[in-house]
Amino acid sequence: METAPVWLKLRVEGDAPVLEALADLLVAWGAGGVVWEGEAAVVYFEPAARETVDLALGAYAADLAVPLAWRWEEDVGETWRDSWKAFFRPGPLSRRLAVCPSWEPAWRPDDPSVRVLRMDPGRAFGTGTHETTRLCLDLLDEETARDPVAELLDIGCGSGVLSIGCLLLGTPRAVALDLDPIATGATRDNARANGVADRLRIVCGDLRALRGTYPLVVANILYQVLLGLAPGIVQRVAPGGRLLLSGMLIPELPSASAVYGRLGLVEERRETLGEWGALVLRKG
Image (cartoon, rainbow, N blue to C red; front, top):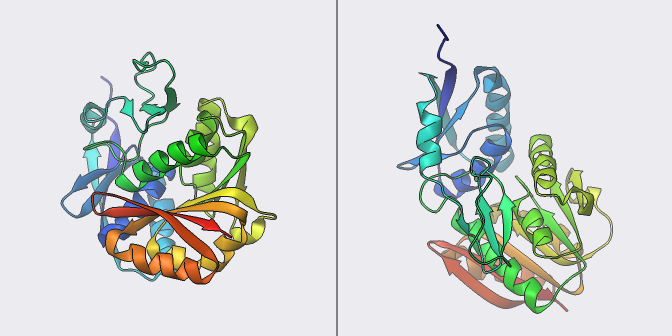
């Protein structure tokens, strides 16, 4: 008789913006998807991952100086996997881009001109993709259709959804940057799965690992991090180039715009979805 597999259920509690940003990392660290239970993020890991995840969570909380609490529970069986999949279906991400999970390989959109991003989203309930990611993809779709660029820089790439999506939309080249080697590994796997690995350069490190400037830069990370990294991010935007920022709550948008404005960027556009917002700024 086959023994039912054992999984560890991890429940993480903290401030909503911190958990939203953390969710992508949890998936990059090997979680099979994030389920929201009230104000907590719940994920499942194989038992061997516990020590590594504990260390990563501790480092994450310490680096951002934010309160974070988590606990583990044992879960036997795989019914959670089927329940998670039942809440996510293929569908549109933007006007020219759709997402399809790995367990529905035959799905195609009705419009043959829509490109399909093959990726298992990190958030399974509701829309399947968090508002900040949807905001970024919508803006990248519209901005690159209106004013195409030769290269994109994706800062804090996580799973690589933004840079890979932009490549599928026709941008010739992209660079994906993240401090976490697990995240850059996930980005590499996803790039291969979507046939764009030859056009994506993946860098594990901080902004000091980069040289040169880029005509389009995107950063979908925490508000506090966006402010702290502002001078370094602005340095990577080419003269006349655009910067797309997200990961901010709507009340945080004015101060973010002001900080980047003092560094020489002019706000061109502001979009919101739910309680989240995004900015498009241009460097003079």
